[in-house]
Image (cartoon, rainbow, N blue to C red):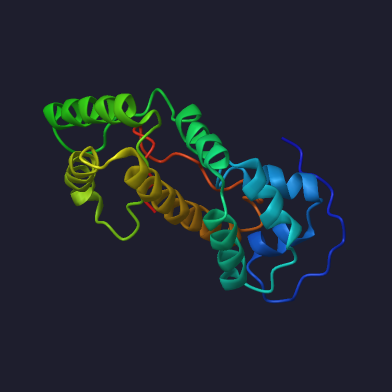
Length: 192
């Protein structure tokens, strides 16, 4: 995919390469890159419109503010985007087949109950503990009422988005701004 031409917005020297590049992209190109972090078009437009960002902290603050202001339709759009990109050929890295079968069954029950995919940030969780954390969280959240779960899912999506933005901001020159991968687990759960 060819990189869009920069629009010449000034960036501060010393910024991480990915953040500097995000600041310099055209509004349309910036929105497209931001959609890899959160699938709400309204969110991406809003975050792109507030550029240039003088640092990662200000980018994350703007992203949080935009996430807190998502309307129900925007949240539904973002959650639908989470479901649309999970790689079908990913294989479990750890854990038993029975545990992954239980995870898939719990996810199916969750999706049937709430009408969207399960989203969970595993930032800071050791990879060996991820499966247990996912299963425990799924089982606990299945007990939520739909309104309570919508709030929880929105918060988890915000946390996942922050992780993706941090990876985007710190992408090096060879990676370009497209570095964040939306999905790092076959269950659509972000491990960073």
